[in-house]
Length: 70
Image (cartoon, rainbow, N blue to C red):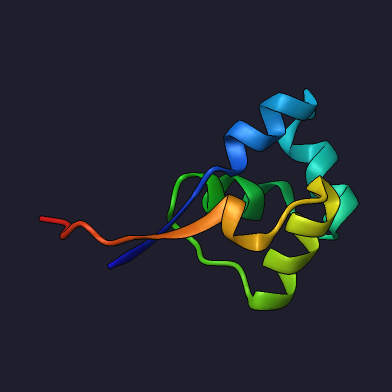
């Protein structure tokens, strides 16, 4: 299983840049970029802050892909 996310989709729906989101959730733009690309898993604290910013449950942004990756 792999943790995936819809962060880019949520950002687009709110029409904000990676930089704007980074400032709001106190992360770097590079970290937001890495999360969106699946190269970095945020801490639970950071993931909760991101979900709180978008006013959604954490599972709406971050989820387990149960299909096997090859």
